[in-house]
Image 1 (tube, rainbow, N blue to C red):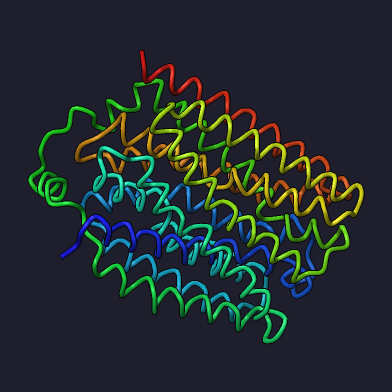
Image 2: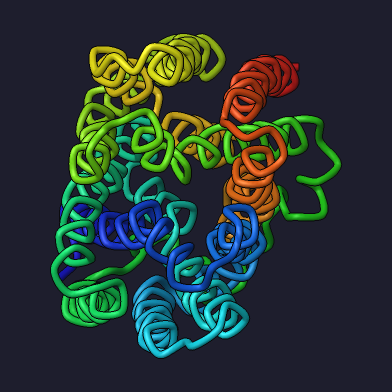
Length: 393
């Protein structure tokens, strides 16, 4: 029988593997550039496809969650993602890689994303939504911490194609069986099956300012963080950091974010989403500044400062936005509503992944890309304050 703790644990494991696979692209990035001989902006379109589908697929994942439940959704998503990665390992051209990795694997990974997992957990813990979501979301940084360095080791020893085989195996061997135990709580599951009318339907939700401000927050969060996440390893290597050390630093960002995620969840339940996210994003802005100083001075100390400051902010946008959405919009359509809010993260993340590489190709460096990331985080702070004001009104 599924218990609240079981559901939380399975969600954490699912998000760990999903995010670890997504973030592993950061160490596959330079080998793929060498393999296919294209510019950084062009190769980054592979990751753009993954994160774009992660956002655009959120409403479909939310609707499937409401209709079919989490078990079928997550097991199917893991299987599709594994097939996409195996096909990608056989790609002989960049278009083939974009199709297999960016679209097929991206579609499967979108079904395993944070939004549907957080919605499931939030329904098990209605009185402590933000803290429960933050606890489940601890799987996200742990997955990155484990899989990014592991993928770097695999790439160095066996090549990027064999690395994709291992990532596909993790999806099949861990995510599929674990989600055999994932269910919605009985009351919500019964309401969904019985088709109880929901006064906070999607139609009603999109007519509220809160819906659009939360979507705006998801867009700028996706843009600001994905730009840095995709290009941080390449940035550090360009600054003279050894590849394995650079990959370990990105993994360490996720480890530091364990404290940041718990902290922002605790603050959001007590002070409200806007103050909590403001503190978090200010730390993120400091981290982006430290990364810029690493490029300017080539001093490894700035890499350590980046890991600390940026890590404390990593993941906070999704936690706060989902907690705010499940509190404002509830009932049988909560998965779809939250999914439509999360859809805005897809274009933001795709723009961040591609834009960082494109700005590098245009300017010959990452300075302009880091400025764009900082502006996006500042805009996210403005959006969350507007969302909080709208909800209170």
